[in-house]
Length: 454
Image (cartoon, rainbow, N blue to C red):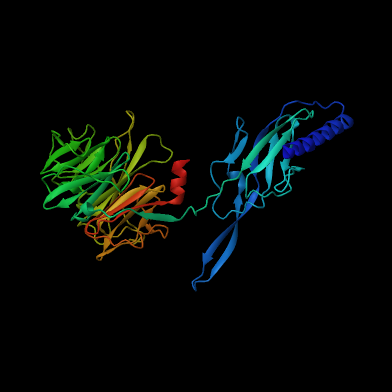
């Protein structure tokens, strides 16, 4: 109670002096009995980063953070001011310049961190925001005030840091001789080969797995595809679909499809017996031959993987990047892409071969057990090269340039099989699963999780 009285007394004294001064200085000034903080922003801040030299010595260097890039929300009901988009890790919040706008010429004060005293707010003075601070804004006529709690949020982790978490090993997964993983909503499905048949398991948390019915075709696992929220595969040459991975129904396709290779929100894609890409817009019933800009002999025939991602700045358009090994292209992956605009007025799009004119510099090398996925506004790809897991390659230009990205690495303790592993993503988390060892890993780039959660 004593603290409240002190704050009130100090504030009333300040407001009385303010009202008196305004009356003396300018008799034409308009005084108001209400006020509020209407805008709050930050000046330039310092950020301190750690680095390690080639000799292993640690050092710290300073960079600037533009505070105005981080917007602050003002909840007028609860009188809370905060930034939903946290400042980057390492930002100094003990020396912060703030800019505050008040309604009706209200006067803004800041409560001391050590006492109940109030200090007039000035944008030239830095403040310590290592803890939430109390701001008070007084009505210009001295009749009352409003109190706000200001909190500056800072990430406690580096945005470019990739974090892996290991789940309990699974004996069922360990029994798989080959594997493929897909996401359907929030469910992770893993299919693979066991005793000459395709077996599957699903989970929502990476810990508890549900066994699915066996499929009497050991190659069905590699054709597992998601389209329209359903699972599709080929069973002894016949196209089948499932809503839950447990019950499968034959789809009466008008054309024989030898392999399923890709999908987006509007089309399911497969290869014909002649190695030409077909597409279906009705769930696999009707198939048509797609269009190409190059000789179809360049199309991949094995180790095929794909990634589907939205086309930036084009509403409703998607792009598929398809890669695999072609006998016509030595040493590097055959990479194709196609843009689909799901609009009745859009023109038909064709597959475009990404030719190399740079002596294969920045090309994606030929990889066995290739996996690809859209992630972090780009595409990630990796596989097996010379019997070992390759580096993780990233393309930010839709499959043209592929570079190794040091932010992405398989877990240090990963002992997975190079012949039986799978990976997929829900856009936020990456799942890594291995046969033989039964390892189940879940990982993410911190900034991707932050962006998806905001």
